Image (cartoon, rainbow, N blue to C red):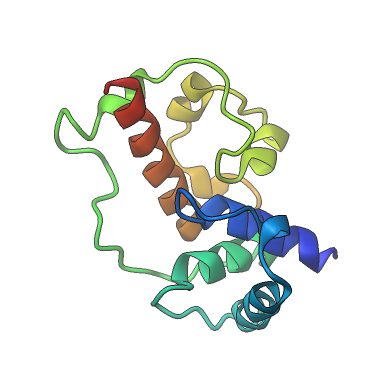
Length: 148
């Protein structure tokens, strides 16, 4: 298992706009992320500034057959207002920097249209609740920039 690749994918999928890619982070910060990821790989997911990163590491490293622990999100699962449904109109290929791009590609999901047809993204290997949250966040951001 290539841990650095897991850290890279988790960081790049959950970083905020304007933050550098994993490979551009200073070594001390990458080491800190590796320490936090080690806890996540043992099922220790915490809230706070690293919550999304740790959740993504957990999603990427848990066995497919392992039952997902229940989590309570503060965001609704399904869009409830027209503004929240905007992302359903996105078309074209998924950008290379899209959260879990490689996992989606392996599952045959290469476009926004294909992504919108998947009812439960957690059925895709390597995609769990933290990844789904990152995907939804990105869809909202993409829709916002498209409709701006």
